Length: 264
Image 1 (cartoon, rainbow, N blue to C red):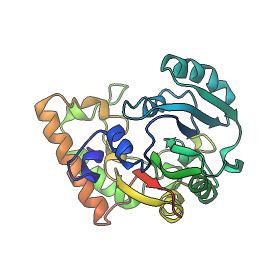
Image 2: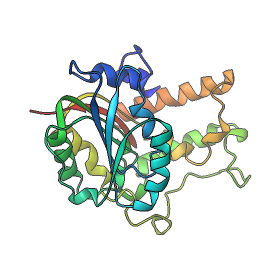
Image 3: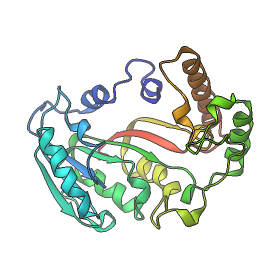
Image 4: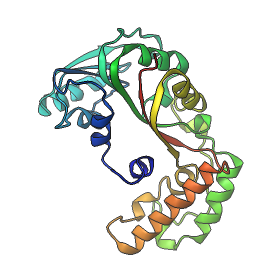
């Protein structure tokens, strides 16, 4: 739905959008880069794009243990990958090298967000694309008062069947996450990500959303079935309400989809 929103309804397929955004005559022999790739379970599909042929993908992560699974994932996908263990905050990337750079739900774990955005711009090949879906909301997942206010109003309006938690209890109140339960690097500089990306790169597609949806539905979204007509109507209503609240500045967006090219 977010991809449909940024393309004006032309496509909801992000792989198609990435292929069209790549401004180079080459469609094979391409190089990819993933920062914070972990086990690559989610990321690998972005390089299995029929219009584009990636012959080599470099993957960086601070946790080398995840690479054992990542190697298997990439082999099964028929993708050649090189794995590098290191701190992305301190990594110097080669200039004008990569045709697609991906950071998927990992940027909010980085501390040097401005430096990394600059490095991404440096390493992109001319015409290459950067793609991220990531959390950009308040640091340490501490929802703002406005987010809590609107989310609580909507929670109370939802039918009870939509408010069931995994434990089976019915959610009665939207609460901030207890920071003590989070990993030390969870959303440490998340509120600086969007300004860093918009400053360092040439953003061509962007949708910022979930200022309402994230605090409202985190932990209860599994109650909604997008194939059920009644649930689908409710999902679309909540999505559209979230769009209005975020775009009019009533709540801070929690997530971004950003596609950008090299800023010269």
